[in-house]
Image 1: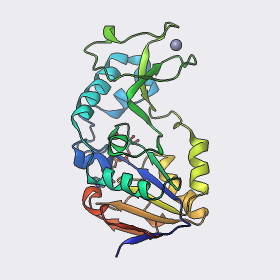
Image 2: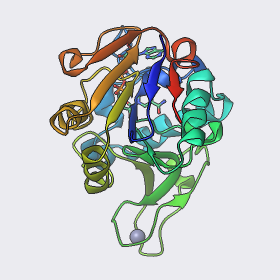
Image 3: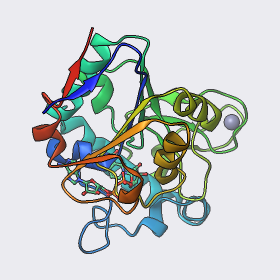
Length: 238
Ligand SMILES: NC(=O)c1ccc[n+]([C@@H]2O[C@H](COP(=O)([O-])OP(=O)(O)OC[C@H]3O[C@@H](n4cnc5c(N)ncnc54)[C@H](O)[C@@H]3O)[C@@H](O)[C@H]2O)c1
Ligand SMILES: [Zn+2]
């Protein structure tokens, strides 16, 4: 039975690493606790950046190279097709730093944890993030900002505040249907979004092969891989 999206619905979607798994990008919590051979604390924290920027850039350069080879899968495409049918009533917030949602055609999209294809000044000197897909072989190749600071990946490290939280909160408050896809419910504040949506009275649907840690907060759980389950899961009513 497809899930109906009715004309009064406003849809808020939260995606995590799971939606990109079928595109060949590894999810976060692999069996061995490593992410592409790195310990998260060594490459995804402000402390790691201060201690060893070369290791941080080595990791994100490798992810850029990997991301460039990946393509959107039917899960990304299904979400773009829903948005096309309900323009203005659809907001997609992703925890992913890859660009597979935009390449699938999603437009009202927010990358709460940053974007792999951008860099910004480490000193937050006021400039906007700049497009940057370079794969740096060494730290010497990494450009400096006009202020002298080094460019860092435009990524929200663990311990940093996600981008544009007030905008996310506003979108959740006015949504009537929240879809959460491929996220383990272990990274905050994203793991709390479903609770905020429930408080605002929204229906909440989880889609993924395993139950997330915050499973109890969902009104419905659809078990399966995003690329297999999402196409055809929703029916847009006119
Ligand atoms: N592609 C990316 O940009 C990427 C990749 C890895 C991690 N991250 C970052 O790591 C953090 C980890 O949190 P997270 O909750 O997103 O990831 P996570 O690794 O903690 O959880 C991944 C989730 O995806 C599910 N999953 C696996 N295969 C799936 C499939 N085919 N379809 C649907 N779901 C599937 C798993 O059951 C799991 O619940 C996030 O902050 C994110 O920014 C991003
Ligand atoms: Zn600067």
